[in-house]
Image (cartoon, rainbow, N blue to C red; front, side):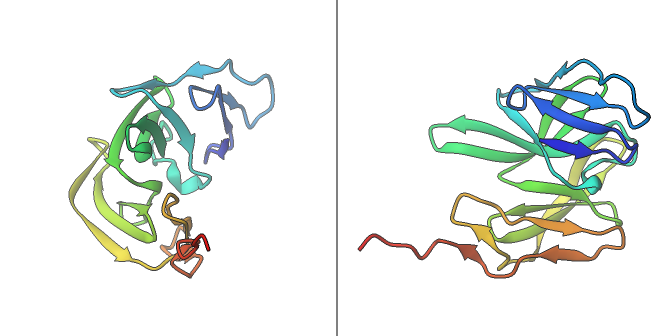
Length: 170
């Protein structure tokens, strides 16, 4: 997985989300892979392929953190510190996190897009999480809806609800 960072650098995940490398925008050799260290439970980090997943400080990016439990795979909204490699879970059961122009953390869960206030100094969600809208296209019961949020706040998404949930064995 890759992320085109707003600095122009390209961030590349390796070892199944256990490390990342930075390819400088000005050319030259890529930086050596840096380990990603979970703050708490073990799992793998994944980039959201949206430049709005990078915070204004240039140091932190939202992503998804996948763990495995007795329930199966769980995905959570996470924050990666590009200087230390430490990743921490911010919101359980969510993906596709981006920072809105209003400073809200916007993410998806199932066929819904949700938002919560985000404190850029403490780097954490604050206040209640509210649903923006439901009924967006999501893959079966295990995938969250994919969306994009522009710099002016325009939300782009696929319509259609949960895709594939009406299948049955006959």
